[in-house]
Image (cartoon, rainbow, N blue to C red; front, side):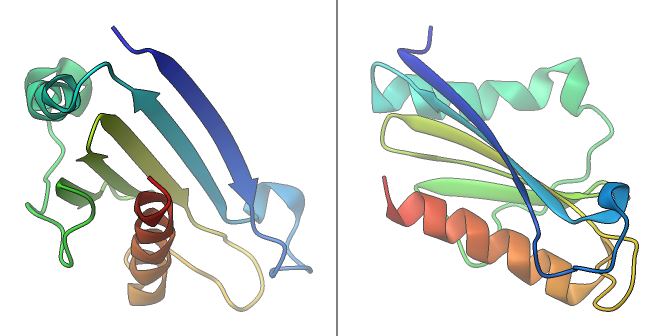
Amino acid sequence: MPLTFAWQNYVSTTVTDAPAPSFATVSLYVLQMATAEQASGLYTSLLTNPLYSGTTWIEPSSPLIGDDSRIADTGDHWWINFYKGNFYVEVSLSPSYGPAPNYTPEDANTRAAAMTFSQAVASKM
């Protein structure tokens, strides 16, 4: 059972001409568990959850984020999850479909942005 749960959505302000639904967005979910073992256990057990079935994970993400991490291109967004200490974290980066820069999931820059954001989150834990 988590001690604390936090959820935040971020919207890109750099794609100023894109219509609102086209803005790139990042969703951040953080669960603070009582112990590092619980965070690690949650990270491991989620692979057996039907919500995650059909997702092809690159394990571990490269570079590694936190104590262990994985990343997936689900076809419409980048999804990164990791744990560090007693924290379990999920980051989902949805692309923009507007004027340049038009970041789509398969774009290397979109993946790099998702990794950079996730690394920044992990560095604060």
